[in-house]
Picture 1 (tube, rainbow, N blue to C red):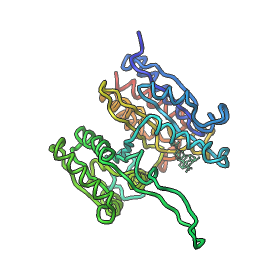
Picture 2 (picture 1 turned 30 degrees about the horizontal axis):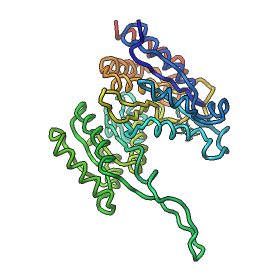
Picture 3 (picture 1 turned 180 degrees about the horizontal axis):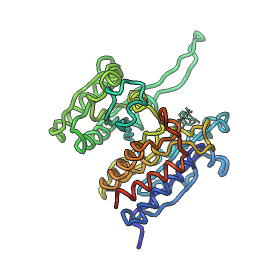
Picture 4 (picture 1 turned 135 degrees about the vertical axis):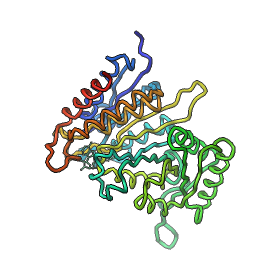
Length: 370
Ligand code: NAD
């Protein structure tokens, strides 16, 4: 049978290869049961690519990413490469792949499985059953705006400049992603900026409002200033469904929200590009955690963020909601059974290894699928 879709795996560095091993087993299970029919390729990114090819991302790898139907990347970086020039650092591979694939919308769910509500630093009742989605604009705004740089003024003082800049199309394409997502969830979008002090924020608010009025009247739209949103996320996060924001505020707010569930090892993400006329959409899936050098090689990393990232791929790239739900359910059941890696272990439980956790999810998948 010809494979229907091409997936490219990028294990990267540190715990990346360890959690990728688990993802491979999950993907193999789905293929073996006929639920998917994917061709799975693999390539290098980050420090390992620098060691092998002298660059964190080769043009050939980027080309393979562009040709794949979806990419699943684990993590890059580590102390071994920390002193390299900026352009050679593993993290440059990440920026390169995001830019090269044109993925402008970063989706980060903050989801608290009920059995893990105690792992959060917030009170369990504040986060229990939390399910919010932060959509961050990824390729524009102050991180890319011109002019930028550091200059020395005539009086000898130095001046650093960055420019926050957004155009109508940049705002509308990311807002569109948020509205579409909301339709598949609880139908609410909260658009976040600082229109009270920034012109780019005024434009953001106006363009999101226009788009909702023209194309998404059925979705409830509210607006919030970024500073208030940060407070509300800690005070009462369950008031939100989908939050959409620019690159800078989205970066901060999604990091803040990622702490609500308690462990980095649980959080997946997706980065999506524009939908082409053919329906094809560039898509990069990755756990939000890094390469965790402190635990790399010990076989104790939590593979659930990687597994859940694969679940997001099934849901958003291939519209396989049933398979994605199956993954979520299997993970939930494994956690309920008290099977935990060290980062989410509770009193009285014995932590399991990365492999044992992965195998438990595969077994649960098989049980659920009957
Ligand atoms: P990190 O996410 O790698 O680790 C932070 C802490 O969380 C560590 O104590 C780590 O052990 C723990 N942790 C992370 N993932 C875990 C998992 N799956 N299971 C159990 N524990 C987990 O962040 P950091 O320490 O700031 O960065 C380490 C390296 O990763 C740096 O080189 C950084 O640049 C890179 N990084 C890469 C990415 C990415 O690849 N997307 C993201 C963030 C950081």
